[in-house]
Image 1 (tube, helix red, strand yellow):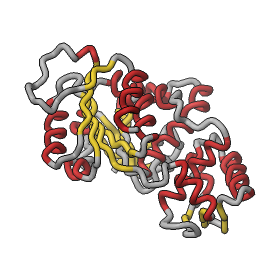
Image 2 (image 1 turned 180 degrees about the horizontal axis):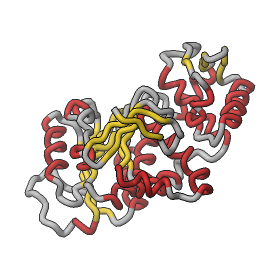
Image 3 (image 1 turned 90 degrees about the horizontal axis):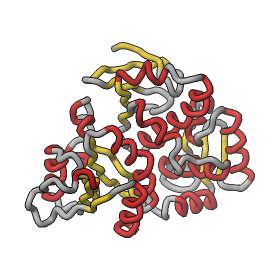
Image 4 (image 1 turned 180 degrees about the vertical axis):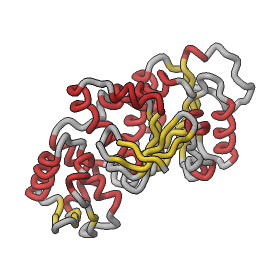
Length: 297
C-alpha cells in the first residue's frame, strides 16, 4: 500500500487508489477510519497560497473528523472545500468550539463520568475546529472551570452538568441516521454539503451521503445495509440518476420515509409516473432549507 501526505493534517498515511479517488487511511482527520479525495484535486489544493492553507486546512480536517466520527463517509473534491470552510455551521467562538468537544465526549461515553481517552492532544485539536493545540488546551481549561468536564491525564469525563449540556446541544438524544441521495453533479453536491447537511443535523438527524461518485469510487461500505439502518431518506432526483431510484426504491420497500427533491433546472423532465414521487422543486439551498425545516421540525 502506498503512502501519501494528508494535506489537511500533514500526516503521512497509507493510501488506496480507487478509480478517480485516493482513500487516506487513519490520519488525524479520521483516526481509525478514512476519507476519500479526488486524485486530480491533490495538486490543485497543494497550490493554494500559504495564507489560504492556514485559514482553511484545519477547518477541513475538523469537518472530516466530525463526519467520520459519526460514521459518515466523506468524499471530497477541490470544489467542496470553499463551501465547507465558509459554512455557517463552522464554529467560530470559543463557546461553540467547546460545544464540539462536549458533543464528541457525549458520542463516545455511555454516561456521565465515563472516561474517553484523547491522546495525544497534539493530534486532536481538530475536535474543536481549533487552528492549534494552544487553543484546544485553553478550551479544555475553560470547560473544566465551568465544571462541564474532568480531565485526568489523557482521560476525559463529562460531569453531570456537562452531560446535560451536551444532550441539550444535540436535542437530548443521539442523532437519527438519515441517508441523503445526491446526483453526481459537483456544483449541486457542494451546495448540499455546505448549506443543507448542517441544517438537517439541527433537527436531530445524522445525514449520510450516498452519491453516484461513491458508487463508482469504492464506497462499498456505504451499502444497502447502511441504507437499511436509516430512519429517513432524502433523495434528490436532479439528473435522473438510475442509482438514486434504485436506492430509494430499496428504502421504500423497507418502509423508510422518503423526502423527494429536484432542482428547478431538472423539474421539467418527465419523472416516472409513480404516485409516491412528488418531489419538492427548489431553486436555492436557502429555499430548500426552509422547506425541509417544516418537514423535519
